[in-house]
Amino acid sequence: MYDFQKANMWKRISAALFDLILIAIGVIGMAFLLSTALGYDSYVSDLEKVYDKYEDSYGVDFDITAAQYDALSEEERENYDSASKAVSEDKEAVYIYGMLINFTLIIIIFSILFAYLLFEFLVPLLFKNGQTLGKKVFGIGVMREDGVKISPLLLFARTVLGKYTLETMIPVLIIVMTYFGSVGIFGTAVIGLLLLVQIIMISSTKANTPIHDKLAHTVTVDMASQMIFDTPEDMLLYKQRIHAQEAEKADY
Picture: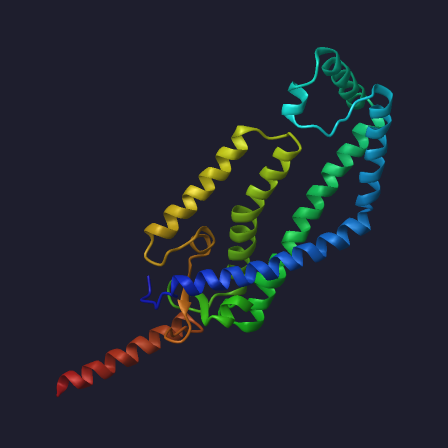
């Protein structure tokens, strides 16, 4: 690995928080546009009407907690279970519920992808040296482990495969599917494993390397003191020049 000037951890954390705020704004904005285009609210309204119909027919309230359900009398519980079964067998309710799950996943997947591509890929391409807005503000950047400028392909891999897919979407999708009752303890174990791997990598590597940097073979450096070369050939010429200067001094 090339000798590098590692970025201060507090600068990295500050830059990450700054970028996270921008990403959240981007996600919310795109989610609003997608939900409007897909008519998400109309499906929510239609599902609520179906629930209201069965609540009125059976005299129950579906919006209760597990503790409230346990506190029901045997007759009330049987009535609640009958209403729930009726909803689960209602083809219209099943269809609407399925559409809501699909639309929720579409909105989440593409909203987060849009925000990452904008703030973690396109902006660094504009600023060069892998700098997001947060990294630009706090004077840090990203380069390859060998001291060469990060290429668009590596930046894409770092952003989409590392940050977006592994570090963000896997946990987010597990949480969403857990909410809809599709994933159990296995999902929690996967999230815990990813978090453990991230902690181990950051704490045990020389450059405090997270998953996305390890995947792209990149490091985060201090721009004020780090020299980043455009190509491996430029780096080799620089080393040769330094070596020649040192050799000249040694002759004296």
